[in-house]
Amino acid sequence: MDTIPTTSGKRGALTVDSPQPELDHIDGQKPSDHCAVVGYIGEEPAYPFILASLKTLQHRGQESAGIATFHASSINARKGMGLVGEVFNERTKDSEYLLGNVGIGHTRYSTAGSKAMENAGPFLVTNALGHIALSHNGEITNADRLREELLKQGLTFLTSSDTEVLLMEFARDISLHGLNGGVKIAADRLKGAYAITFLINDRLYAMRDPLGIRPLIMGKMDSGYMVASESCALDITGAEILRDVKPGELVEVTRNGIISVLTVPSRKIAHCMFEYVYFARPDSIIDRTEVFQTRLKLGRILARESHVEADVVFAVPDSGRAQALGYAQEAGIPFSEGLIKNRFSDRTFIMPTQQSRTAAVRLKLNVIQSEVRGKRIILVDDSIIRGNTMNHIVSLLRRAGAKEVHVRIGCPPVVAPCFFGVDMKTKDQFIATGRTVEEICREIGADSLAYVSIKGLVESIGMDRENLCLGCVTGEYPMPVSEEKYPRQKELESFTP
Ligand code: SF4
Image (cartoon, rainbow, N blue to C red; front, side, top):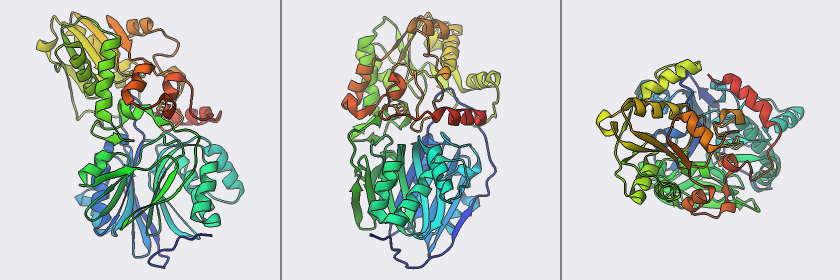
């Protein structure tokens, strides 16, 4: 059996400091981002690099943030509710507590489990291996069944999170069967999406699920190595991109380089198309594909598929910007700014009702009257999920004197839930469920509406269709989805403001 030694050779304490109060924020009209994971090992203190990369990945989760570092035989962790800068700042003096040259970080948006502080990452456990800390992006679809099995075997759980199930499964299997054998067993038992970074004492590992649904990329710095959900987090630390973690691959990230420990075989790959459409930052490169170029191409293809005579192209800020630019370039219609977003409104208000959410949308956007009055407008966004925001924007433009408003969407209609870590729940939340495009057009009050085709989406990403997950636009998933999703969804909904 292979073993996981610590270089220190000692077992120390495992401490968590979580002093932040729970905050809440507006329940947005777009699917919420999932999570970000990072890890660093090298010659310098890990904390500043992990903090910088988490701030860069804030778009992937605004609910909680956490960092765990290994120092002097201990893993110290600090996590709290809120933005990265709210949890970690000069006042909290974390650099004095989170010592050590190896660590991991996490930002969270809950897709399984409640929004409680207890579910903030990284998760920690101590077993025969020593101290383990784990950050997870994705969703384990059979978490409920595995939790029951592990409970029957005497393990205890402190939270409702699927990440704790994943951690306990990994920790138990590696402890019993060594690293290689344990990871193979865990990967066979765990269904769903997981891109993870984890510490076993002072050793840093990273792994992607066998379908490669969520992204994970590695980079080299002068002082060491980093792994992160997106390449933009490597850029910010000055790291040079090495490569993506392959689907099913477990790597050990060491001070001297990356060791590919094993790759769990898989018959297929299923990268999430929504990373390219909406979630990832446009300056990120995921699986060797730049997100900005994909979005530009989506706009170009959309223009070819659904041309309409107009005077100007606007983006819904900021999500539709690259697609709108591509549309304008292809159609030969001027691109302009017609809508201005209040960047500081998102987390200002607690909005528990639909009425108050609508008021919150009004606070987010305003029009530039001179760019709108008397114009035939093409309004481009990356997706429509519930439709409330688009309805509001169209009516804003009309009130400002727009002659025509033609809506173009750089993603096919979302008609099915996501089971793999994106906060798109039951079908009745989607405006496209049970409605034709004409009916949706009437609902949002536009003069015309068109979505990019699935073929156009696949062409924009530039990968083979069979290597992409298109589940939320086709209802066909890359793995059998468990019937247990629905009860967990209901639990989630009860926590959604
Ligand atoms: S169902 Fe949609 S959002 Fe979920 S992983 Fe697949 S493509 Fe991504």
